[in-house]
Length: 131
Image 1 (spheres, one colour):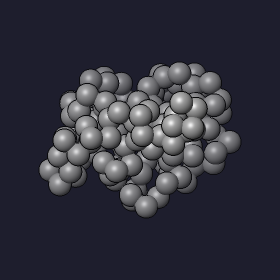
Image 2 (cartoon, one colour):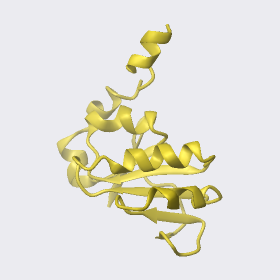
Image 3 (cartoon, helix red, strand yellow):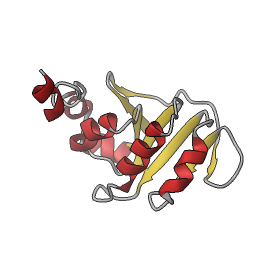
Image 4 (cartoon, one colour):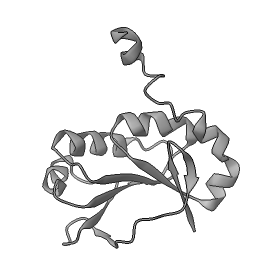
């Protein structure tokens, strides 16, 4: 099972589509962390994109998400894998709508730890500089 984390906390997966690997045709695409950044620009018409985080120390997914959003992607963008609560604000600032974690990670980092970072716009140094 998996847990979907949003700004409102933990929830269940309400996406009813099927993710297919990058390079296959489908409305929902799974993207590995080592995907060619140029490939992201071809995904702007997808309904949903899920970018892998195989390790909390692998931040390439943040870059891929930012590239995809700058290319005009307006669909559902999900980070999945080993994303930590401390990384939630960074994920949101880079364009992710939600994070998918497994039950074991949700047990180690309960909902309150994720909600502490849910006000991700208030904690960005950019907003303090503009304000």
